[in-house]
Length: 184
Image 1 (spheres, rainbow, N blue to C red):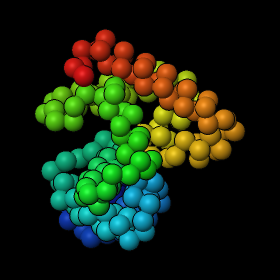
Image 2 (image 1 turned 90 degrees about the horizontal axis):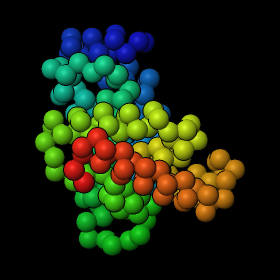
Image 3 (image 1 turned 90 degrees about the vertical axis):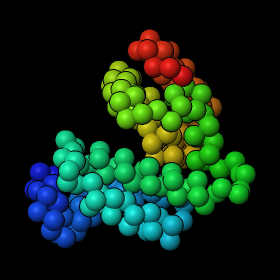
């Protein structure tokens, strides 16, 4: 089913909208959530919360890209769940380390909606300018929260090469955002 048809089901308040969304994007959403939470039960609960949020926000929102919209909702839900679950723990797991790495170059998350949209546009512009391999490595690490070892194995690279690509890309991102007037 096409995204426009699924969105129309949400506007009609048809429960088939969630069913069709799960059919089309369930595996994609599961990959995002499991990459962050690493626990099937937590992931399932998080996905249910994300689908509920999707149901509550469409309408009035009519997303241009349903995949991007649900991906963002799922990722934000997973990160919120991760923070709740690990509030007491002080581990050095993949998600925490990746978020700490990215915090060096991304502005404070306490910005308003307008600033958030500007940041999103800047990030999209930055990612479009990256060489394909660098973009894939960057997204694998900071969107899907994949461990460096896994990224290296999947791309036939040494871990040190992946670390180097990520460091250079973060530095380029920081300079790019500064040039675009984003306050860090």
